[in-house]
Figure 1: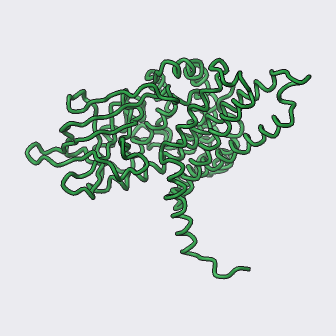
Figure 2: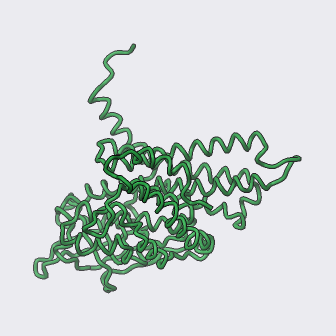
Figure 3: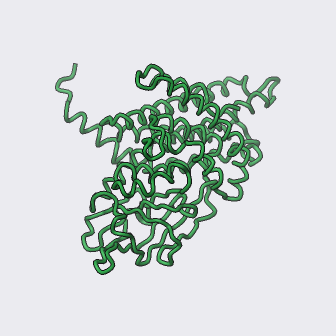
Amino acid sequence: MAFFIEDQKDILDRYFKHHRDLGESHEEMLRYLGDSLDSFIAKELAPLAAKNDEVEVFQVEAFKKLGALGYFALSYPEKFGGMDMSPVYYIAGLESLSKGDSGFTLGVAIHGTPCDGIFRFAGDHLKEKYLPDLIAGKTIGAFGLSEVEAGSDAKSMRTSYRFDKGNNCYILNGAKFWITNAPSAQVFFIMARNADNPEQISSFIVPQQNQATFKINPIKDKMGVRGSNTAELIFENHPVAKDHLVGKEGDGFKYAMHMLNGGRTTIGAWSIGVAQAAFEKFLKYAHERKLFGGHLKDLDNTKREISEMLLAIKAGRELTYAAQYEKAIGHKNFPCNSALAKIKGTDAAFMVSERVIQLSGGFGYLRESLMERHLRDAILGRIGEGANEVLKIMVIPRFVYQAFEANPLRKNW
């Protein structure tokens, strides 16, 4: 079974096949995605996906093996151990990984967020200290923005910091919630509010060193993405070295929003992997299921539904890969288009997964079908990295209005 499919290759060809600066690198990346990564998914991820979902286990060893394959390093500079390739290849790989095991791959996707934040906003000393091991998969990263009462409304965070002049360090207090990777992570990218100046939100790199002042409480019994691990973080007068402030004090929220823009394309790709997995499993079932003197695939309704599924998947994939390309070249429309890609990808995952179960009848409703997991996982995509409802109300219209007001329609024709 191929986890990297022809449609992915075709999109990458469109962007890179004739790129004069890539030379043989593009073909090498296609071989990597189609051979090395495909083999890893087939051997290490897909066979254990259902079991890991059942028992809620995140495969730390598989994560390390993925790092050893060079996947996390694809789009980072060579001086940090990276391959200096376009992040669009990373997105294509993420889709394939999610098709194999979307629970595990959520952890992979979220790991990319602190990596991106450190690379883009941290000082050289923090990059040199943490980035090489993160992109080699030797350490795992987590992103601490959400709180119990500060999810989509991130500015409502209550986790605070103050500077302790006597000990020349920052002191963190508060709690973060829904933190993916936290039980396995060694490096945390944390947002907190200045206790003395609440308008200031800053970012910190917080290493996990098993201190009593930094507690990690695992969150269990999730509906979906059970192959990832999640936790609450509690800081009780937790010291953070002065030089672990990321960038400029007070710019943390700006950094977080930039990081979430990138996270939206990863969730878009992750969601398309969920949709593609459900779609292919249904195609197999539709060819096997006999009814009304033929097969399920022969019914007109099935043909119509398959067409709608394919339309949703391909549209989500095109938007997601295009948005990631815009990120790579620094296009001004990337924030808006990453939100569009995230919405379309996550909606496609939900629609396809739901229709697959409906069309498969009672069999699709059983765990035995290996289909129902995709619907449980798909729901999370529409919530994380900015709930779709919030993106439609607060993010996308802002860009639409700005574009129109900068160049309004003067006269109807």
